[in-house]
Image (cartoon, rainbow, N blue to C red; front, side, top):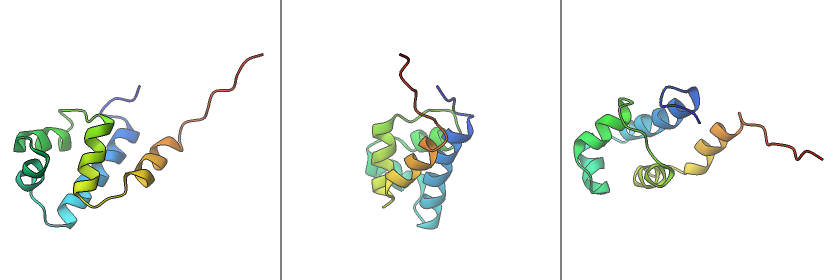
Length: 85
């Protein structure tokens, strides 16, 4: 499993942080919309807390991002397993 320091995870966090800043939304505004304390967003963006997939989708939707292209970018680096006969 990828850590919070992996390139894949940083791709996800970077996309969220970039969208938040581009839209002029503060960490406090985003956390309030999510129903979490501001420190939640700060810890996510600083790599102190890992997002689960549901949290990621909620954040992406609040930021008007389509989560699919971000997940596709991460998933493109992983090759499917082949069944052994």
